[in-house]
Image (cartoon, rainbow, N blue to C red; front, side):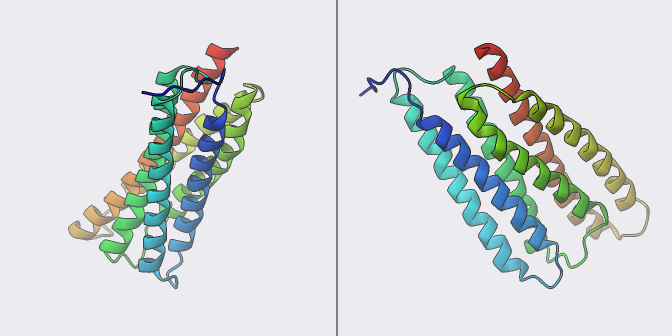
Length: 205
């Protein structure tokens, strides 16, 4: 195996940034998908394409780790951060796929709120990735994402209560719950990304 002879491979920071940018795009497309007049099949395909792009960056980072002698921070932390960023996109893509495959015409009231939380978390994450270079000014990021996760939990619980209120038939409840749960998983994954960033920053400080 060939190893890099550079003291530290800084390309990782750019790749983390690209991965986070894909999450911003995915969250924006999810917002578009909520519009009942939107071509949801086409939007779902766009989100799937973004998910594939995110996978490509994930594989690129893993290959880089395996061929680099000195990494910017612990290899295990790089693997964890990469995996969690990828998890967010997987969850968002799954939610979009359910909306499309189940041909859901009307989404429950909490879904737009969940997607708005995702958009905010995606923007914060994309803004935070370049700061990994200096490991400074990151505390506000993970504090805010943790706050958003709490907001997301509250929205999720209210959404479940609404689904089981008797307003929907059983099959509709099952379909809508799949969407709501994938969106909640995406919010949770954003928090895991923030927790890993906090862990890295504390180690490197």
